[in-house]
Image 1 (tube, rainbow, N blue to C red):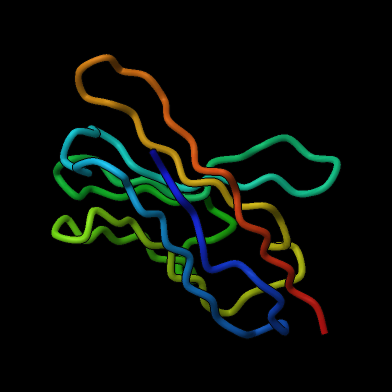
Image 2 (cartoon, rainbow, N blue to C red; image 1 turned 90 degrees about the horizontal axis):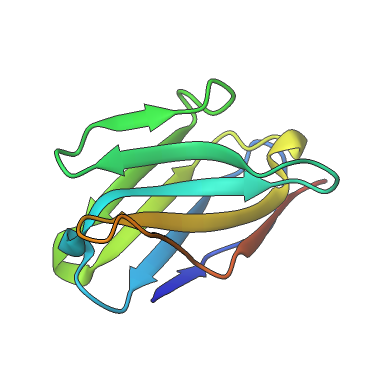
Length: 115
């Protein structure tokens, strides 16, 4: 139900925008967000947005990443600026359904920050 895209290779200091397309209505989900998993590390929360558009960010990305949603397009985006090598990871979009409270995951998109 979730399809992530937008990853790639970028130089330090560069920017990328990740997108996650929902096959159904994004309004069916109470929370939408992004996680990442770097090689050899556990998956961690990057950012999330609730149904009231309140946002929360990991300390490591505050001021550099912005999560946004486009309800009409059933899409959630992650705008990443001032990228650092330590941002290198597979990024996953995630959403919690408001009725069954299940977590749904996208397939992951690889972001590599390297010169």
